[in-house]
Image 1 (cartoon, rainbow, N blue to C red):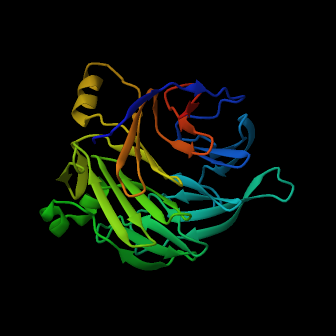
Image 2: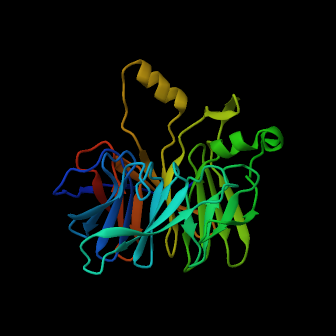
Length: 324
């Protein structure tokens, strides 16, 4: 994408007093707490730290098959003083609250997702009654779900130019168009970025406008094998945040062909994206940050001018960038 500004950023590494992570995928900050979600957590998927010092506080989202345990962790989000976690393996959303003593975090509510929805891989809270999740069936872009997990309605379409796939291979198309999403209730903006290719979608839920911005790498490329979409193009985005004044997204841009060639030659490049793309709330490119680390998840604080990021390649995986 054509950005009017490119800025190089240098990270400050945040030392941690405990080594917990295998694959720190998401970081979420609210007030004096930061939560890191580990995609491949051994005992627990989520870890809470005091912020900004990153002193360990507690872990939650115990790995396992018991009723209050998680098979997998796709995403975590703050909503008010609570944390919500998505387990695609069990197809449940769980609400976690801090105990009255404030010493630990316990599951308070478990929502089983409607069986009409295929594997749910991300979620946002629109308000106290409604979630939006990407539609894994490909028949629409999003599913709107209530707090009982019931499917309320489907909206939108995958904005693909691949008419044949839209007609005959919607589940494979939805798989290739797997997107990470974020929503900001203060400005009503919902953003979606594709894991493959280079597509940003911006939906303003207040005025119902919808912008699709496709970068030079194009829409997700895939071939269909036994009903599944197999990626053939590039690794695209890995996280997105709708802040109050702009949209921030981590971009990789490495082709699967290049990745395969490197593996064949025994070359293992760092995992993650070296770019953070910044867009206006209407999807206009504003700035491209070039990083000195490869990152997956971000948490942006526009007021402080800080981006926290997770680097899965390092022993100290939490890093901080200053935008000022």
